[in-house]
Amino acid sequence: MLRAMKSIMSLAVVAALAAPVAASAAAAAAGNLDQLLEQTRNARAAEAKENQARVSRFQQERDKQAALLAQAKGELAQAQARANALSAQFDANEKKLTEAQAALDAKIGNLGEMFGVVRQVAGDFSSVTHNSMVSVQYPERTEFAQKLAQVKSLPSIADLEQFWFEMQREMTETGKVVSFQTGVIEPDGAEQQQKVTRVGPFIAVAEDRYLSYLPASRKFTVLPRQPDSPLPGMAEDFAESTSGYSRMVVDPTRGVLLALYVQRPSVLERIEQGEWVGYVIITVGVVGALLAAYQFVFLFGIGIGVRRQLYDLDNPSTDNPLGRVLATFKGDASKIEQDAEIVELRISEAVLREVPKLERFQSFLRLAVAAGPLLGLIGTVIGMIITFQSIVESGSGDPKLMAAGIGQAMIATVLGLGIAVPLLFINAALQSRSRQIVQILDEQSTGLLAERLEAQKRA
Image (cartoon, rainbow, N blue to C red; front, side, top):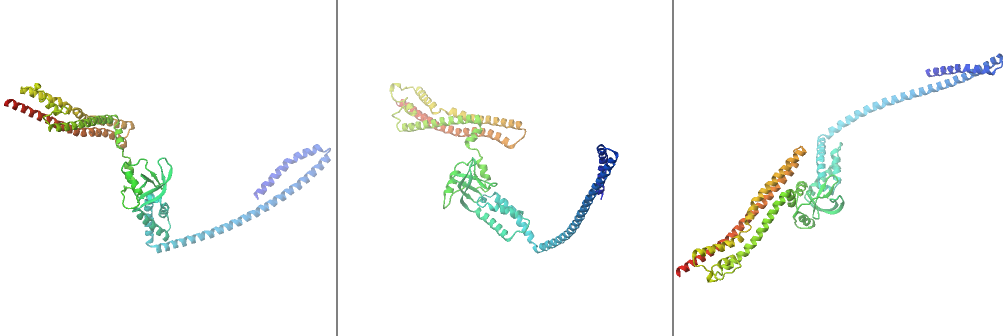
C-alpha cells in the first residue's frame, strides 16, 4: 500500500509540472481566448483519461503483488512445517542411533579392546613393512597395514585374516634367500632391471655390488661407494650359487652398519689426510726400506761367501771379506811381517776396512727411526692448529668439524710410528747380521794371529 501511494504522488507531481508547459504551448498556438479555453478543457479531459488509465494499471499491479505475497507466505508456512517435521525426525533418529550404539557396545564387550590392539599392532607393522626391503616384492601390504591402523570402524574377518597372513609372510621371508628381477637405481640416477639377491630383510646384492633400500620409493639403489675386498667377491659368489652353502655378509641393522662401513676411508685416503707431512714421512720410510732391502741382499751374499770361505781357509779368495782378511796373512811370504804387534795391526786394518760396507745405511735407519715420531708430532700439531682455526671461523664446536682436524692430526702420528717401528726392527736385524759377519772376521783373524805367534815360538 505504501508503494502505491508513493507511485500516485509521483504521477501527480509529474502532471503538475507538465500543466504549465501545456498551457504555455496552447496559448502560443491559440488565436483568441475562446480557443484557449476550449483547448484547456480538452487537455484536462485527456489528462483525466490518462490518469484513470494509470490508476487502473497501478491497481492491477497492487493486486498482483498482494497475490505473490500471499503465495510466499503460504510457502513459508509449508517450509516451516516441513522443518519442524524434519527436526522431530532427526531427534528421533538420534535417539535410535544412541540406543543402537549402546546395544552395539554391549554386544561387542571385550572385542573393542581387541580391535584397539589390532589397530595398534597394525600401526607398528606398517612401520616395519615401510622399512623392510621385502616390500619391494610385495608393495601392496604397506598400504593395507596403514589403512587397517587408521580405520575407525570394526575390521572384518577378511581384514583380520589378511593381516595375520602378512605378518606371517614377513616372518617367513626374514629367513629366506630370494633372487628376483626388479628395478635398481644406478649412481647416475638411471633405473635398470637387474637380478637382485636378497638375504631376508637384512642385505641385498646385484652381481658384485651391494644395494641400499629406499623406503619412500620401494626401490633398491646401488651404494655410491662399495666396500673393499673381499666383500664384493663374496657377494658375487653368493649371487651365483644355486645350491649348497656360501659365505655372505649379513647386516643385522638392515643397512645401517653397511652404510657406515663403506664410509670408512681407505689406506690411500688416510694417507691423503696427512697432507705434505704424511708424504714426507712415507718418503723417509720408503727410502729406509729400500736401503735396508738392498743391504739385506748384500749381507746375504756376503754371508754365503764367508761360509764358503770357512771351509777353505788355506785358499783365501778376494770375493768375500773373510778371504780378503786371510789374504793379509797368506800369499807372498815377503809381505808377511814377523813382528806380532805389526801383524795384529795389519789384521785390525783389514777387519776395519770391511766393517763400513757391512754396517752401511744403519746410521740412516737409526735417524729415520728417531725422525719418524718427530715428523708425526709436527703433523699432529698442524692438524690441531687447523682444528682450532676451523672452530674459530665457524663459531661453534661442531663434533664433525673437530673430528676431521683431529683425524688429520692422528694420521700423521700413526704414519710416523708406522715407519719408526718397522725400521727399528729392520735396523736391529741388519745390525745382528753384520755383527755376525764381523764376529767371524774377528775370530778367524785372531785365530790366525795365534797361529802366527805359535809358529814364531816353535821357530
